[in-house]
Length: 539
Image 1: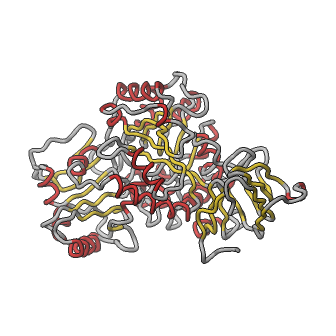
Image 2 (image 1 turned 90 degrees about the vertical axis):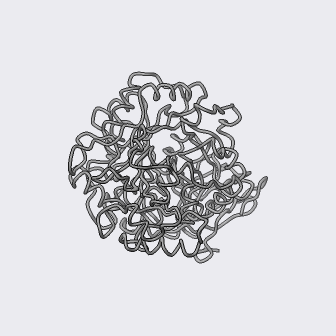
Image 3 (image 1 turned 120 degrees about the horizontal axis):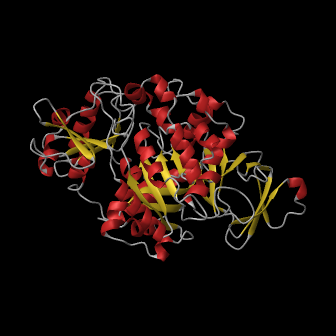
């Protein structure tokens, strides 16, 4: 709608700006891709140049997903979606694997994503023997919803060289039956034994998938993204994302590179970490533990069930400090995955009392932060550690949380209100596709989950920790910018990029139970119309 080097005025809108000084407006002037004025239309005076009548529609700043896995999400779209309504049982999964095996032939791996044993009729994970029934002659790999666990068939185990004699790897576990035979379930670092032997798409093939995904994200109003699993090999993610831009990727993107890769291949030159670049390296990433739903989070007390399972510790103090030093030397964030009480305490206590190195944002981020202790909340606030969390987890994975933690402990997880009251900087995100939901990246599902604290089936997930709607939107916009450091986005204010979305319903007026039904009519980046839902178009 607005081209570079000209001006357009938007009038008659319901604009939520996410700007603290002027949160609401009904008119906005955009010039050269940036907001130059925003406020009350009555104060606007004469309109110069083009104008657009927003016809009373609700406008929000472009949404920022502060933690997701775009490449994994783009690839998942080509795999079996092992979630309801397609897959409700292991028998359903077997049928889908058999069908894809028949369609693909004998030379390709069969891949699927998103199973959650809590949602399956059998209430257990599939095993190698289940998958062998579907396809014994080709390798099969199915990734659990959390993305921390995979199940593979016997052919995949054979190709990876995993036998009864194969020892567990550090930070990983090979599940075994009573006779010591691998069941096909590989947890955390053990899954790498298989994934490292899988065929690798070319950089260009992956770039094309990311470009296709861009439109899906724009359709959800997401104008800025992150990749929480940046790799240097076999494909360098920075090069891949820059190639994707040439093929149509439009989102501003911050990449967080895995520490293990950076140790082997340091590549943090200033040009690659320049925040002004559409694609840039934003942080150093490592894992402190696994997932709650997969029982690999490092917890205390232990998970429910037989034996005392406290999860898996996945890093050491030495590694944390080394990664932190590398982040500091390159003016980047340290980004650490942690869900369980012990994992969060471990990170917070390691850095407690140490001064941060960034001046424009938190130096350290804890991703997910499912189960922080009161002491962790206090110390994280004092140390300036940010939390990037995902409301969709409890919404979509309630069965696994109840099975693993019990109903009362579940209600205390993801205590967003307590985080904010402690003074911690918080951002919302999706972690897509690492959750058991058919449309895992939809931010309106996350917003609904945060303001209602109800699961998809109506289960109470902790009313004491719900937040108001304005706060939820801010955590997907301005607050997400303050943590991701992507410049001049997240709010509509003079000097900021004109990244904004127009909704088909007023999010402030609809029943909160129906927030997830809201659709985006149009999405703008830098004042340019980059997405239009033709079935909902207002002009």
